[in-house]
Image (cartoon, rainbow, N blue to C red; front, side, top):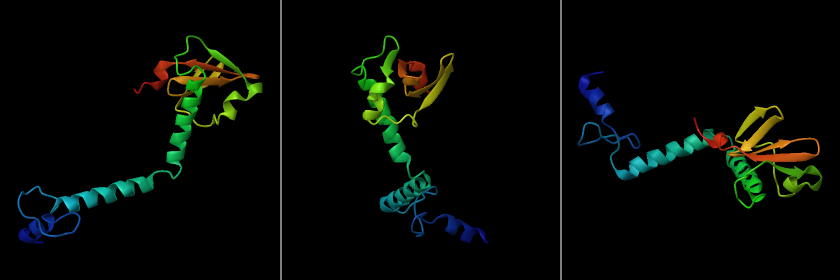
Length: 137
């Protein structure tokens, strides 16, 4: 390919293919083409995500809200115990299958929605706050 043909091919709009004029690093002919290109790129990325992702995020957020509602949103000073006989968590729609992190200690495996965690024992559920579980890095 000759240099002029290669240069002409490189200087076309990434969306519509029209020749570009002006700056040498220009990639779109106008804002409409740039917006269309970026919108299609985002839509393609969303199509690669798992189809249940929005519902999973809603479930994790709901679990967090349910755990926080046990103390009216106040931080826990000490562990809270909830009898499993009352089904307090499941009646509110709590789904223990979805959480953001876990932590192992001598009592067992704690699951967390951000900083608020739970550990299910034989006849009760223990709830605690552990702020470091919500930190990234």
